[in-house]
Picture 1: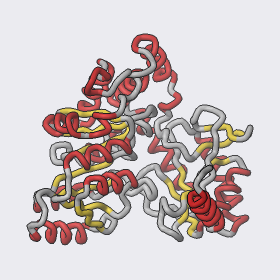
Picture 2: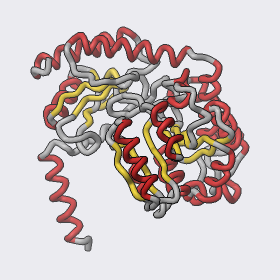
Picture 3: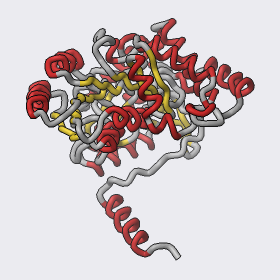
Picture 4: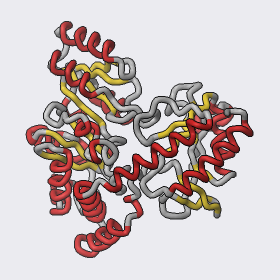
Length: 396
């Protein structure tokens, strides 16, 4: 017999989420996750994927992944510290360090794992972390796991960061103080003020930590936000994912060799979870090589992002203050946001609604992710659907 208390908790809270328009229905994609996808037998223009550069369905990456399976098998077979470190993993890490402009890199099973691993391996209850209020959930969870004092900083507010850094430093309460920020904030598409953050960090001897999940492959000719600002020598932790622009799966931390050596002996996801598959490692390495050899994919991404932004802005949609291809259409109220997304779907555009708790209440939005793989015809069609639905619902 199952627990009645558990049953009561689950049913009551699920009903509440549905009533408030906060329950997220998970869609099952019946095709590769490209610029067009198939759901429920319906073909749709896909504006919800993180596959920024189209590499998740790239023929070259598929070929090297197939070869890797034939050569290395389907799994690593063990955790990295026993005998699960294959040559394909070390090649990936060497290429990542070269790509990010650092001495070394370490790979993990996901970007989420990176933040759980790296923060808690370095910070503890005697330390403090200055964290931007809009940082990703994985950063928040990594900070909590470390047991360090978490000091919330107003979003991209450099005066607030300087004041709180000064107070933390002068209090004498903490052995180490870290400042953590996303490189690109995924809900609004704005870029962290890294030059100012680094200046404040140097003033108060802060450890600098940048999660560049949405910046890698996008900024700095693909190398990320830190490279965009030329700050490779001044940022201690560069965190990235292999699951978005790189098109595969996994994550990594890049930095000084001594940092990476420490993470290899103290970060728990590295120590206690099997490595990414050989196919993932080889495909990710190939994707990074492509980005290092050519700017074409990156340039086309920005071209498509600017094109969609202009089209939606000209119609009168509120697209916030995005500085990257991420293009939110801010609707506001949660149920209205979900209704807007539903109507887009019915008209042939897949753009998922984003509501609380992912974003604050009252700031619901449909987030659009144009990619390198979209054609202008696809984007024109999507803009036309936005116009139709926007006028129908009274948003524009």
